[in-house]
Length: 490
Image (tube, rainbow, N blue to C red; front, side, top):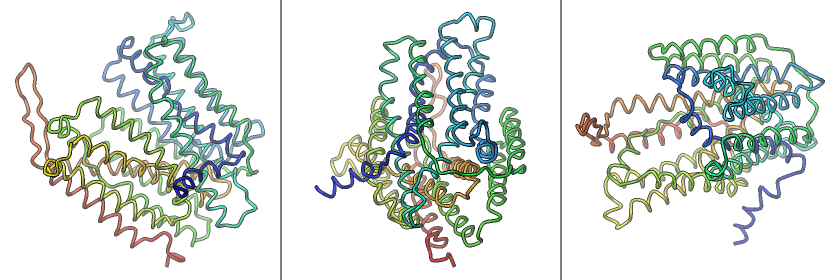
């Protein structure tokens, strides 16, 4: 019981007053979905966006995240009003506020927007808001390395950097969980205008946090023109490929993105100690491979609906349970994460993740029926146990990035590394797509009471086995071969 209490108290004891303002910024980002339900219903009821418009909107809203390296360069190299950190959070907050005010005007049919098409104003407001959040995200990650006590030894600094990443994810997770239920409940009570007006608390929280935060002084670094202007060229490429629906665009964007980001990372660390660079490369390979492992895809959900009778409400319960327990799991495991090596944690996560895949595999073969267990109970237990692991993997990644962030280039470093990890997730999606082409699984579809496609789940068991074995063997072999924690990485 004492050990349980000690684990709960680890993050609380780790919080220092100098962290709190920074955590407010992460909390604000986590609360960004507050008006999501109201927005979804308003768009459905009042806008008439065509398929082309929706494709264009999707492309434009991904561009700001794609060009994070540009924002990173701005944070590292451009000083505005005497600041190369805080001022960008204020700018981001003002952009979020502007986008929200435009939405308030839209949903209330404000006179000052009467002469503009609602669809165009909505798209513009969405893009402005996303740019604000991306800018704040880049700066917050950069500042997470600059609130530490630099008088400590190297090992203490490493642990503090890791704990800050844990606390940042906890702050974000608490905000996500806090608004998860209330946003729907309030949306039923208040008007769209009121919901968007209340959501102005989000940029206000960011501004309060950045006003109070105290950072270690970091001098601006010279602008890296290759990364800065290359980022703009890359963004243009992504927009053209995505908007024009180029054949195999997913693969094209993946490989080009990977080459561009790796080249930019190489240029960024070119003057660092070769031993440090080698350690970074090996750790990047390990985490990239871990995050690039395939998933089963929607076929498993289809089977659970058709054969196990899982309905929308139950999937909603699984999602809510997963969010709550992921937060709790991160809280409880914080002490373990900051005191263990990256390789050791990833090996254990791979083993545990594989083990937790077995109940689902067992349900496909009817093991739960033979044991007299209800399928929903098995699913709830499996979700409860497995929820924290995505959070833990994310904290490991951010800890690695924070530890090796080069001085004067931290904003660009965080932006590029975040892009690399997003590319790993894209690799997982592409890998999963090709596995689903190899093992064809179909659900029943019909039109006018006539069955068009018959349900066929015969290959689901083989697909599950394939995903489980690949997800176990490939990461373990990679970690053992490229151990980022081995002495001097020789």
